[in-house]
Image 1 (cartoon, rainbow, N blue to C red):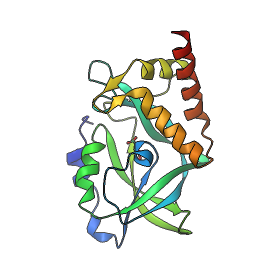
Image 2: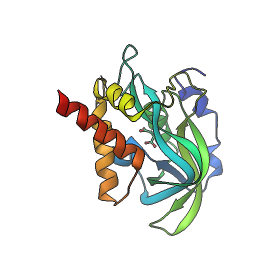
Image 3: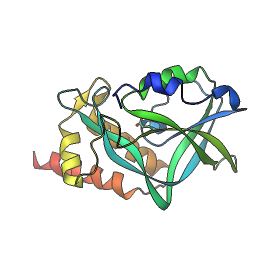
Length: 191
Ligand code: SIN
């Protein structure tokens, strides 16, 4: 699959079929909300965990020196914390462009915690089939790559710090994210 998924995403779902359109954010969509929305809710996605397994050539790295950003991987019994946003269809022009580096829109069941209900909605997931996928590595290797990467959206490490802060604000513990954050801080202290 090509890096740029914008074109594929446009044709994936018929957004007219939704009475309300909700999108689940688990990475930068939690803390960088640069799109209009009608409502937002603390939310959960069951059966997935966050991982820094996706390469970033366009936001937090460059084609020569890709950074690492989050995707979701299936894990039975897991619960991924995030934020869900109810949006108008037109917002997907922006979101598809923002998430174009390998992410595909998937339809999932989202638990809207604030609203106390479950809805069918969309989430952007970068699967191992996409050309920018980097996959599993040790926390130290992931942290080293992130520490040394930067792109048009800023230093890769800020992606980690901003997400970790947002999770702490919600009293959410995410061992993978906090491990990488600690490993980045260790690298920084050794400099
Ligand atoms: C998301 O936040 O839901 C997708 C991944 C990202 O943009 O960081």
